[in-house]
Length: 337
Image (tube, rainbow, N blue to C red; front, side):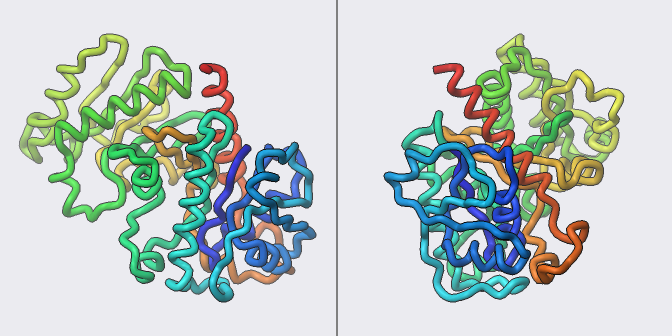
């Protein structure tokens, strides 16, 4: 069973969810949202989808996906959404939907996974909540101190040492402890959910040219190198620290399982430049399975009329990939029972 939170009501998340529900061949799924919000989204984008409220008791008995039917565990949203215009008054509702979904996953972590739609961080903060992103929020809800954000497609995985912090704060956040913990979480994910017993992890440097021997910065010499050299597990191949501007050369990535970038744009810019729209956002280190899309709320696309050409609407690729990855991870966990 996959639980889906559509994300920002004014963005493309609700539309993507109802369009997905109209298709055949989808896994068993249920939305955690306001049914009226999803019905309005279906009407706006011209989808003949039946939004079907279900109870907690019915949730456990949902069968295979029926095209054109979207089960919803109803959570009331205050007021109406205005496509393209996030409303801070919806912040508490959005976080409540996440809380409900995470708690359900925690009750049956090998049978239920979470797939999240994009949120508008500024609007949630304007609503009075300190919110830096799904990864951090869900980690806190699960009682986990350390989580790792990783984006991946069928050929490449990029994990991040730091996530949603200002660039001027990154250098201070690159610490030996954080690097050790992040690498351990990546190794455990590779072995437990990807069945990779001898992971190859390419670790990027923080500075240009990986510090140029200390001339452009000493984080590589003082922090990154000592951690990699002292790694106690000989069945983990740690490469680095490497210069980020050459580390993504396609010819050298065939034997690499994960690239660890020091900060958000260092890792995600080259990944999204080539693969945007087909990438899955995965949270590592959680006791549950959580995946998400690789894009934001796309407020400009949310205002398109139902008559808009299909090629102009937000693409479903990333959401479909997120569902497949969540389903794959659940299968991997069930095989280990």
